[in-house]
Image (cartoon, rainbow over all chains, first blue to last red):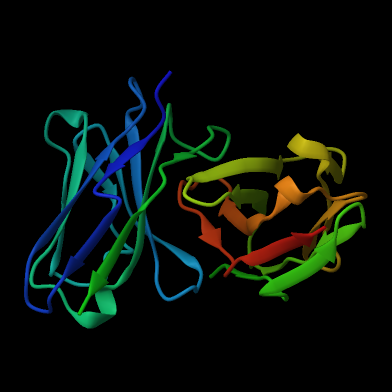
Length: 115
Length: 113
């Protein structure tokens, strides 16, 4: 069974540009999460999808970030325009169902560098 | 609000020595506790979790952790580490009936030969 995949693995862009990160969850997992780790600090929650609906987007830092999950399969996270403080590692995770009893499986992350 | 503190950002240790990675949490409500491991160029992998019951939890690769409610701690231990245990370890909590993790800042375990 394939795990959670993320694309690209690395992205280097200039301040003001746009970047789109993609996450493909494990097949059949309705729940998809985005997290971010900035500058070696803690990993922070961004948002949670259940199928194509945003269940919780309380962690989204500002309106420069747009997450979508059309059709309830893969998800994209767009940053427009990117700022220096957006640099970090963006993790995606998926789970079969909601709640802490269901394991969240994490992807390898996308390392975003904004210069 | 929840917060997780991992007291050591880096822990160097020699192969076959014991190790303890410390984790303390702060929460006004009951939480579940987890340890994740990230090997180089890989995603986070669940090491173990405490949901209820026995406060001593055993995980994969010989790791174990003990939940101490009075000290709000969930320290990770291994009696004898291997080179292959070199990785970054994350402590995390989730509130009951919620879905999002609160992670610590990670501890890099460096096992030397």
